[in-house]
Amino acid sequence: MTRAIETETEVEAEMCRQWGNSLATRSRQDTTRTKGEIQNGYAVFALSCLNWTHLIP
Image 1 (spheres, helix red, strand yellow):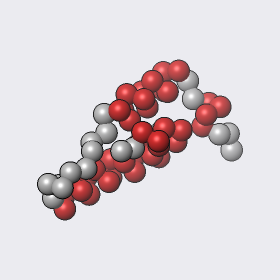
Image 2 (spheres, helix red, strand yellow):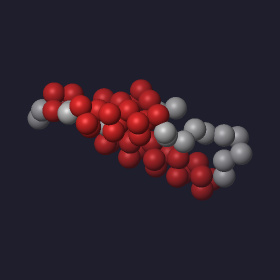
Image 3 (cartoon, helix red, strand yellow):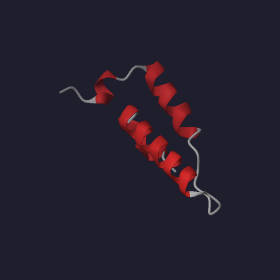
């Protein structure tokens, strides 16, 4: 299996940077629903942008 960093293009890297920088942050006011949605968003991001998980708040 080829590591993602070896196949990531500049465009893909920029997309992950922008997406990562726009991820929702958690709040004390989050409901159970919003907590789940945020967590799901983090999981999708982590699977899509393997080298950018450090951007998850």
